[in-house]
Amino acid sequence: MRSHCGFHIAETNADEGAKYFFRMPDGRELPDPASRFQPEGVHGPSAVLDTKQFVWTDTEFRGHALGDLVMYELHVGTFTPEGTFDAATARLGDLADLGITAVEVMPVAQFPGTRNWGYDGVFPFTVQNSYGGPTGFQRFVDAAHVKGMSVILDVVYNHLGPEGNYFGQFGPFFTGRYATPWGEAINFDDAESDPVRQFFIQNALYWLTDFHVDALRLDAVHGIFDFSAHHFLAELKEKVADRSAALGRKLHLIAESNLNDSRVLRSPEQGGYGLDAQWSDDFHHALHALLTRETNGYYADFGSVEDLAAALRDGWRFVGQYSVFRKRRHGNCPTGIATDRFVVFSQNHDQVGNRAAGDRLSNLVDYDGLKLAAGVTLLSPFLPLIFMGEEYGETHPFQYFTSHSDPDLAAAVRKGRREEFADFAWQGEVPDPQAVATFERSVLDWSRRNLLPHRALRDFYRTLLSIRKRFRLAGSRPRVQCDEKLRILTLEYPTPELFVFFNFGESRIVPCPRAYAKGNVVIQSNDPRWPRSGPGSAREEAREPSECEVRLDRSSFVAFTRVKPLAR
Image (tube, rainbow, N blue to C red):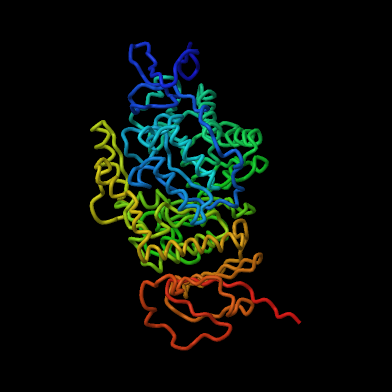
């Protein structure tokens, strides 16, 4: 029987695990685009699998409210030496102990070979066989829930990978109206787009229902082109809200977008799509440029303390002003949108892996810089995301890797990676994405977390997350001020009462509001518990600070609570 988007048959006697192909009119045998399992990879037969047979033990888990999310992004293949869901499951206790409430998993849809970031997936309903397949992922989610952590899955609805992509043989899945940097644009608004839209909406509901996933991170929604009257993202949000109500679980949609367009977050009544949260690249760029002094590529738009202050006030820096990097005006104003609807980070897979050498922040700044970056991110009013290994200062890179079987495609990927970094003028050879060594260099070295200073840094992260939870910072609206000359930024939270100095400059003594004076320090990054990178600056003032002053070491921060008046 032919459908609008391909072919299907009704078969009631297929055994679990039975393998099958679709035979096309020209005689070719192709795997099922809606396959539930590809045990032999993207070119092999599909296999019958009933994902509803898994026995769950997480029946009491109902998810987290948005403001309670502290996210930890991981790549299954490099998170552990084994590179499987079961091996990752064994590490979940470490994350819960750290203070993580949500594990964000990079895409797991079946991709070519065994080494890939996941954004080359070509079977949206299939879990990568080399990671442990669908059942392995279900075990992982179940275990995370038992430990009180939500699971966020990264899904890709803006394109499909180039190898093993047979979708065009089954229906009008693609459109020539638009172009993406990653391949053909998916057809969300052209002729015969209705069943295509439903295919991807059903995919989202599949992960949330059959795999008990709590939220989806929607990759690069600026690559989802839809100029119809009812945008795909708005429709997706409606369906997910309905499913959330039906299941009695908190389900969220989190977008990645480089548009700084508040419509992604605004309600349909305000002309928006109503998604729950969005990544803020501007926060990262502003913080990164301050710490590293990098000014190439998109960092050309950043570098001042005010850039970071603006991102802390609004959620992103560019709200319609001219962007040097883009050579045009960029963004619109997110006024009125709650702060706990922005996801912020000092590192993530893109901002590390899309550097030429995949170098982490630990390779670019000293130990004090790492603590300062953690303080700004985790003491912000936004939703924080930690990239795997960041919490203990992993020094292994996270590089871009693939395992395509087509030599011409592999050569094109190598060429594309070299050309991609032209604007940044980074030095050194770009690692070969196809080389096994590129993948192996990217695997976390868990032994570091037990050594100094890595062990101390992890304790520092755990302390910051406990403070964040204690003061309920998510969703607050702090007063943000900065001094460009001194390179100091301050956050003052009215409720709860918390005042934070962030010093991106040299050591100095500065005035402190009397209400937050000595005796009420919550945390200071130069505490002996967390070793410093080195001595203070040569210009450090020798005198001791007065009662209403505070000494700020180079690249440090300190947080105070308000002095409580004496009882009469």
